[in-house]
Length: 228
Image (cartoon, rainbow, N blue to C red; front, top):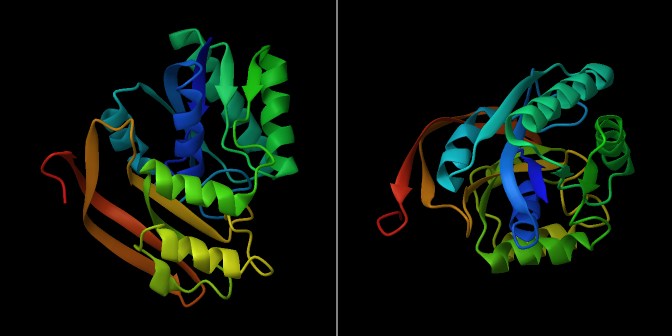
């Protein structure tokens, strides 16, 4: 079955892509570009860089601007998936939803209207176990947003590694370990399906203390043999 992957550029969409690639033909990526960090459904920081990730993957990318309110977001998602169906003949949509019923219902509703299968390879799995799989599988993801105590802006730019997993696991009473509630967001620099690695060259940090984003302004694609 040909599928598209809802692709934010973060750890969950990349893990969902990696798992789906073992069962399905990945026809393209679909990225929604929110107007601001207030978007109800989609990641805002660095969504514009998914074109570099698509190039690293050797996959076509369907990009769609996305207003922040719920109804407009869903319409933008439907338009983007329609474009993927028309251009690449996709029959199913892969999402990175973990435990957000709101996300899953929204994605399923759009797929049902379009007559497509909604595939959710991470659904209802333990968040900490998924984080450990991210690390173990070779997905290199960095923190690009924090949005609430006790996650501070000192995390921005740091890698999701074993130490970060243990930190998030220890804060499980305060923070969703997957960040699915918007507590934090990530951006992937490398993963097993990438043919090249992304190297950030220039970035800035916006915000203060426990509400801040790392905005990557310039990147390059490096051969993996020479990337550091």
